[in-house]
Length: 148
Image 1 (spheres, one colour):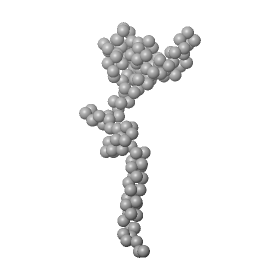
Image 2 (cartoon, helix red, strand yellow; image 1 turned 90 degrees about the vertical axis):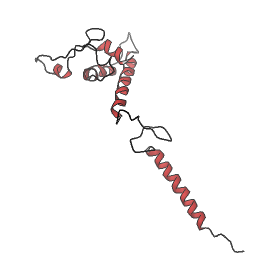
Image 3 (cartoon, one colour; image 1 turned 135 degrees about the vertical axis):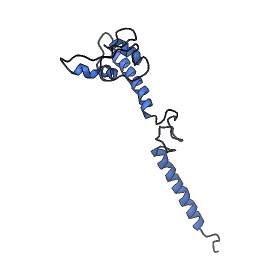
Image 4 (tube, one colour; image 1 turned 60 degrees about the vertical axis):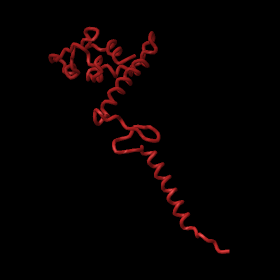
């Protein structure tokens, strides 16, 4: 299930196949107060953008157990949630729009800017360099000519 299908099935803001009513989550919490809405021609989820209503109201439904007549529903909802969160998590971690995310030169795990290696690979390289330098130092200290 895609995030768009999840929204199409569960979102109360969708009034047409892709049209959004735009009711905010905060206005739903104020009981007895008039509801505020900013209708949109196209739902933000269908545009690939973040939607606070979807994040705060629809995504928690992925934790609800599946009904007996559709046992795989929870797994499909969880997949849609992970796809949505993965899409928007990558967008938040980018430091600059033209800068691709960096990865470790050895193992490929994501690393922060100004690093060439991840923490584990950096420690491994430091140990290897220390051993190599100690061996070279030890080798240089051996006497060249052994007495007979």
